[in-house]
Image (cartoon, rainbow, N blue to C red):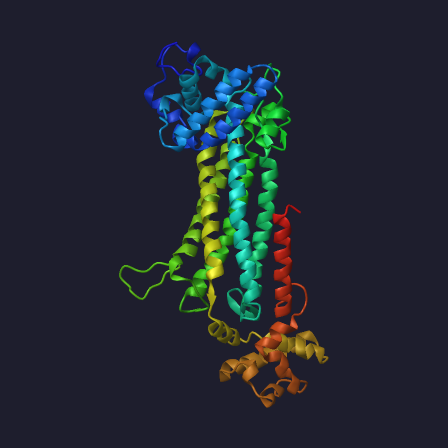
Length: 467
């Protein structure tokens, strides 16, 4: 075989690959990231081949020792990655053969790069999902503790970004936590489908060697081997599912980021973020910019793009493996990195949020946020809801004209709109009374917020314990 052709497949070729084509088709510049998983999979494969008698114990040991030495070279930055060898798999195999001779060439018995790369990606994804889950748990814990701490801190609740009804800061943070709880479920569900082993499917049809895929699956910690060899090498559903999870998660983080950006502005002045999560302006010395939430908000579109890339990549592929699938790694790697970094930033930042309670309270007093409470009060006094709605609307119009909140009006002023209103109305017109009146599961009453925080804490603890 010509030295200019690739040693893994060049036997039937009469001329070397064009230099540009070699660079264009190579993936080693990015898939070398899979080296730890590639070595892990190869060690398990060699162990299985020895158990079924395809390799001798001495051959197995030589292969495993050589792979461990290569792992050390990679970790120390001493490994020479070669573009002509195309990918992470052939780079490691070629180095193994250099180190231990012809025995290194036996490692590939009973497998193909098709099932090898599919296995590597799943091992990589499983590792990364576990890291991401740690950050997601940490963020949820921080939110739960913040919500519990601020169960009585009153702020305005909004619809259409208009003041609607008073809520508490703790109640609002628990709304964020609920979003993340659903994301957490999606992540764990995704992991179940990631943790299926393609190795043994070979190129597409399995292998004639007497392999034991259950042994390999057990060695690698997979739940089971895949059922169909064609699907095993061509499936990238798990990558699409992960980026779908990532897109929904980043959408939630982006919504939170938008609120953080608004709340830190002088116009809202609801919270303060520690300086370490902000930056300044090169020209305006007074500026304190909420760069972390702004950047998370910006990275959301990047992850959406990766989801569309993977969906488009797979939409027209016939079974089984196609070279197109080389394009799955860069969007997947970047989605993983982006999700992990955004979660880490939020997990560090959210528990450090300092609410400006006086500003929140004053904002809740503006905008007639207890108008619904007045309507409910009238209904309890026997007034039909539509009539109550009209009465309150007239009261609000009067308040706009006189620049008075409902709670600031005298009893005489309120009674000009309905004689049904009595002195006890002021119990429901206060912000505290409005918040406390919603005393049911999911409501804003401080005791309900604390109870919800405790339930969330227990659910997360049970999740940690594997319950």
